[in-house]
Length: 622
Image (tube, rainbow, N blue to C red; front, side, top):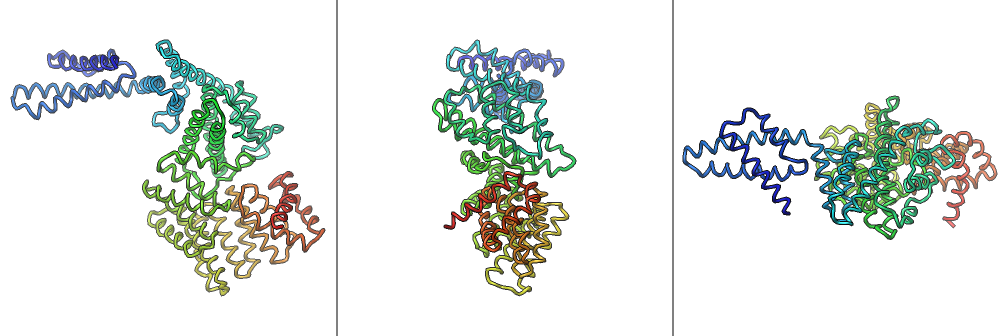
């Protein structure tokens, strides 16, 4: 406190000195004032100087209001001009010393933080969402300044924590230097783009594990490569030091930033790049969230480490939510593979509970809500969307508001609540047209047509006239989605038209639309839409007695839906059991004949897993 007071006194004396020599006519230029500030103000003390300057300004402004004496008024006016000059040069000083000031302020925050908050303080300082986020060079400078300051720290616990931070920064930057040249080299050795890979393959995690020379990040990367539980891995780290988590934070932040930058530049297909960037954000967020869950179950410093991991999870999600390609209409499963991502949504739920209503939170809740619907958790899905809807309205994020109205409509369809489904989609359509949100309008038209189709089917209305309105909505949505080039919306419109014509008992027409729906779902990378289209396509082929194609579409749709945890996998499974009964030994023959078409989509392991899935379904129905 005494240091703070003496600094205040020095700053007040400096201001008074500049005012005094200004009144004496000894200030020849603003540059002279600036140089006096440079000589006497040290980085990290700017907040106190600003307070002192405001104090002097307030005093002289009050004097001008109260004092009526002309001579005193004239002097006060000259003092005011001098203070205004100091203010101008102070703003220049701040701009010139901004980075050093940020680093000095960061050092002070770290040293003065409570022991249990020191790790969180450092993680907040390196948050990429900050207006003035630190570059790697500035992070290195932060480590050097901390090293200089450590000699002045008298508290042993504080000294130990600061030393841990210095080591973590140094090791993290060193590891990144070794990884930087191989950030995307693994991609050229992969059979397809994405994060898939096992310890025997050339996946990124195996390569990166070889590049780092610290035990913790190396063990984590190998755990991911083997598709082992990250949560269980973290729970076993009972003696993990802070420096290891800081090192990992720097490594993963750099990897994530580098990958997204590279994917975003895939000019040969921007949609592929966006799909992979989405996968990157969700993969890294899931890793941090699973680490947090594991540390919560560990012993020493577990809670502090868990809070740090949750903090980083939110940082990743906030950066993601600001991207132009943030998937308000699904896409969470694009490019995903590996068992460790199956519970991504559950893990991401926890850190969101810890943040207040923001635009970022609304968008992330939208993503989770739509994915919950795909897994058959309809009540939870609506709860997420309702919460996102409320936040989006407060934040005036209209596209997010429209997206949630559309998602609630589709979830109501899944619950067979068609009246509410129509109501929500109509509201989405009106609002999207009001603000000119064409993507929202496409999805609203698709949602409305989709809802009308199912309502008519529930009422067992078979007359074509009953479906005219619904088909008209879907055709308009299809035209608009074609104009936008939005493959996911095209897929949804084609799929809904296919369902409409299936209901009208026109399976041949339905097949044409459903095949297109599947193809556009493949282009968009939305596995959920792919699975749904294939499931309906299998039923359409069955209706036309094309049993060979029904086996193909049913097996592929069943596998895809089961792999992403979608409850709808049971629908094609049920049809396949019927086909097994009808075809007998011919079913295995039909499946073998479609092997060459199935393997390119799901691989040999996926093909071999199909009989196991059918056995699981049969056991579940007793």
